[in-house]
Image 1: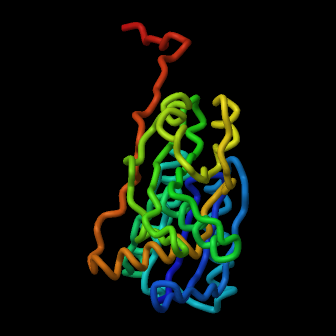
Image 2: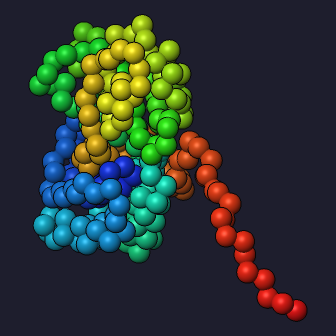
Length: 245
């Protein structure tokens, strides 16, 4: 299965073309990523075009498009989803939305083959660019071997939480913190935990999760952004101008 993976939900943008065989068989044909705080709209489509050219493939030869659909930055998330949907519509291909949290977690679990350090619990901590965090905790029920997404159990749902709430949940756990907001979280707590910073997920794991989901479901559900918080809209500081009758 040939998959185009797209991400711009966190701290940059990623495009990756993968050939995926079995659950763990991933061949990266071409990939590119750029860490930037903003401006994904200008970079993402040219990046996809370069990756397609480097992989010597066309949109018609793709089998699937995978895209991170949140939680994440409001604008970046919608840029990636809109781009994925446009390509899918033009090429008549299925598009699958993949959790940003699961993509970050999968990106970390893949390195356990080398570090061989396992934890009973994992927590993904992502930036909201506010005082709180995007947070989800998982339990490792396969301590005797390398954990995979399928072998982890969700302890909490993905949600927005403050530092004190997260600290109370994880305080007595033997846990690894993963994400782009781990250092900020620990700076607001009275203790620290083992942590691994991931500023954006690896494209090949976005592709892997999308392919696995598609194989299990075999249907093209509508790809929607996942929002864990309400939009924060402030009142205008300047009174509106009125046209005299």
